[in-house]
Amino acid sequence: MLQALHETVAYIKKKTSNFEPQVGIVLGTGLGALVTEIEVEYSLMYANIPNFPISTLEFHSGKLIFGTLRGKRVVAMQGRLHYYEGYSMQQITFPVRVMKALGVSHLFVSNAAGSLNPEFKKGDLMVITDHINLQPESPLRGRNDADMGPRFPDMSQPYNRGLIASALKIAGQHNIVCHSGVYIAVTGPNLETKAEYRYLRIIGGDAVGMSTVPEVIVANHMSLPVFAISVLTDEGFGEELMPVSLDEIIEAANQAEPKMTMILSELIFSL
Image 1 (cartoon, rainbow, N blue to C red):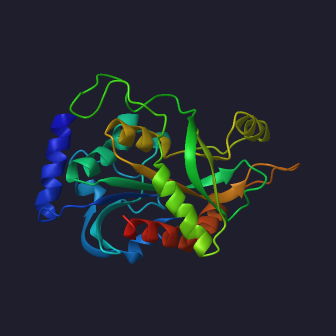
Image 2: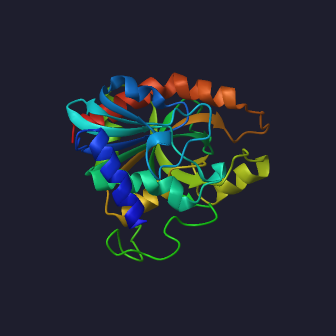
């Protein structure tokens, strides 16, 4: 992996005139509009970057964006990668390792998720304070390279407490409904059954999705502080479980996206 990492980073630096980002951003389903707030200097298609997986989802752009956001130099993944697309955990988290190697000091992650908590409604935001990983393997499985991180990284505080507190304060100042809670990662791509939603709630989840946790594990492996936020696009509780389509999920994410963008941009500005 180190050889691939060096090759990828060298290519990116050549194409971006050695642009040195301070912040890395991963944008989830329906949440790519934050890019419009960035003063873009360089844009690289995933398909043209050596060793970079290609997003197979039609609603994910598949671009690595370099520019300035609120005075901070950023690199943003416009379109993330998922385990259910057929890639390995190491492949979908490779971009996080690339961002770290490029120099980022903080990682910001967003996703669309289903609410498990009856008090958290569709269209609300949720800052992730902890997670439960139900995906089938770890991105750290296999030989460990000590130059990247320890064999057994600590996960007692996977999400930065200072950034969590700041984000909730920003949300309050703008009268944005923003909860804090536990995110559960599942494999997907199917949504959950009523019994599965009930189980996920019983074991301590407030929201469920198909991403984020692998990236967070790798970030912690590399001692990279993480902030993560979910847009709640559907509800997995109640007496009747209503069918949900992808179009509805994306529409809900699009409607809530401006609130998330405001929180992320102000949080990044505060660094």
